Length: 219
Image 1 (spheres, helix red, strand yellow):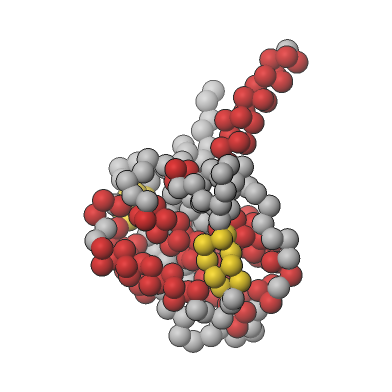
Image 2 (cartoon, rainbow, N blue to C red):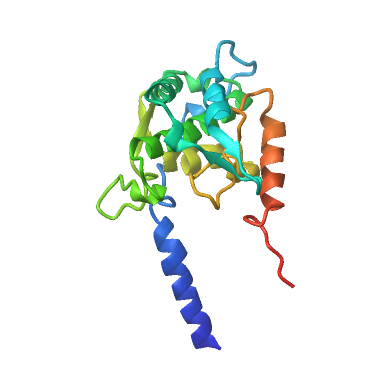
């Protein structure tokens, strides 16, 4: 029994742990202690996610099983350029001046938009893990410094594990950040904003937990 259990644990580590080692690589531990850990008391006017909303409406469709799929093949060069411009716009925002809800919406949208842009940049691929950035042993793009926010280079790992999780401490974040895989929680067709943040997080969490991809009971 012990031998079988040990074998199963080893296989589990090889199949799941090793394939995600780049995504789970430790982020910069100092990120959570920066100015991003603070927030303005009142929302800042002028932060717009309209471009991202238009992009999601046009290219994210829901299949019969209720899974949101990105129509990568249909994305025009113009709309790919607009997506990259939106990401550049977010990189120019002074996040430390935003309210707490604006900050979380900012990080979620930035993470998701950059993930989609990486798939587009390397299309056609069958898995985002084929986008090997960040070193010889990289599995996927998560550990590579790809974003510059307020003068600091960040990887997707830094955003998720160094900023969003420790600063905001909300378990529902797992259902908001999208990893561009069918088994992941949906990439929502609505951009996150300070106004809809609570509703969107709750909806995303319930949708995934009640989907066979999240929980399946057999017997």
